[in-house]
Amino acid sequence: MKFLSGIAIYLLLIVITSGCKNEPKTVITTPEERALTETPDVFAVDLNGDKLTRWKEADSVWAAREKDVEIARSAYLGKTEDPKTLLRYAKAYSMTGRVENAIDLLNRGVQTFPDIADFYTSRGENLLLSRQLGDCVDNFWKAGQKMEKGANKGLLPPTGDDSIAGVTLAYKNYFLMAMSFFCNNDLSSADKFFEVCGDFSTNSDLWARTYYWQYACYSRSGRTEDAKAILKNLSENMQILPVSKPYMESLKYYKGSISDGELVDASFEPKSLAEAEPWMIRMYAVGVKNLLNNNKDKALNTFMTIKNKGFWYSMVNLAAETELMRLAGKKYEEPEKIELNSKEKKK
Image (cartoon, rainbow, N blue to C red; front, side, top):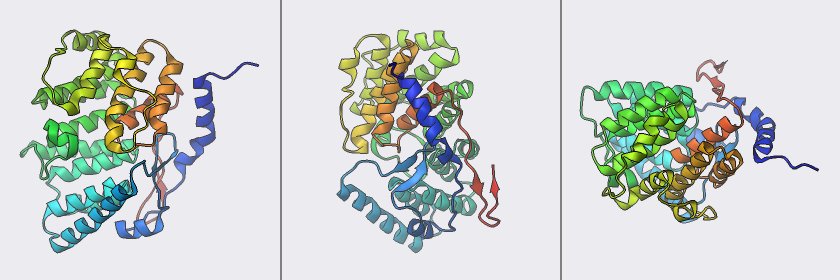
């Protein structure tokens, strides 16, 4: 009896689950109403239509995030004329996984503060996190137009690793735009906007991030010589902060300076999003290298390992989903939507 290959098994799973993608959604008019009526632990669906639920973190962390939503809501209601309070309110909702609630608030922000780039970038990011690839790109374009008229650092300071690495609003906006094209299989456009990220790479930490994604994209878009040039010109002694180490080590791995085992422990079990992110960055590099070496089954298993951890609130996880779709020969399809007023479905 012959056993199915990893790719054949994944193709079978695609057929079984693909029907979930086009189920119409019930649209609620406010984030508060949506939170009361939606299925509590299902926030969106991935590129294949699989449900996206709460990722693994301590109950105390989730409780703190819910508390942040209440604090942000009170701050916003006390100062609705301040765009920062609305941005913080949307961010707090997004961090609980409720990206659709965040989008509702950001729609309000775009209507109330139409000239502030932050609302377009943030709305585009949440659309991307909710796997609405078609809608998010227009937001990044509009954010870019607004930023041409003002500063590119944004109203709110970056948080977490982005803060440490010195990410500006412009860098974030064009990185997310590049990811949108990358996940929609438009590698030529993704190439261009990863290059735009280079224009806003003001330190070695941002360059390490940019090179990491450029290499993954160039290698598949036909720009193999440009991909080789990244590794050839890579300074392995470039001074970077610890948050950028996964990107730099992945580049060294592509170059052949370190092995799979030295790069990442594939059996590691992250217990939080913060633990998962550096691990996923390294694992994704292993998957890409196996693709380039035509080890498709191993690449598939690597991307499935990333996806199965459940940390979908990450661009690396989204990239892994994209690779699985490509390996299955499946193209992204825009989900059906329902207009708020008419309740009529449209594409």
